[in-house]
Image (cartoon, rainbow, N blue to C red; front, side, top):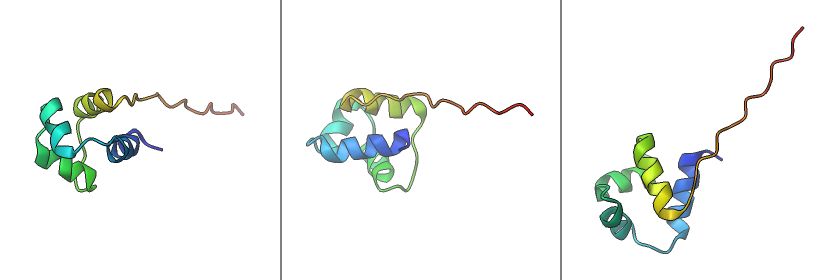
Length: 69
């Protein structure tokens, strides 16, 4: 699952209103709503802020090694 979807899911399940999240993270409520509805993405900095608020961290993906021929 992508980090953006992890953040969306965590926001849905955290039990805190979008209004409260927006207020406490200083992210505009309209931007948060557009993100949650899948209409617009967020910058990495904003995603990290949201992730920190709801306790979700990004884990780097491991690249598959290319086999040498």
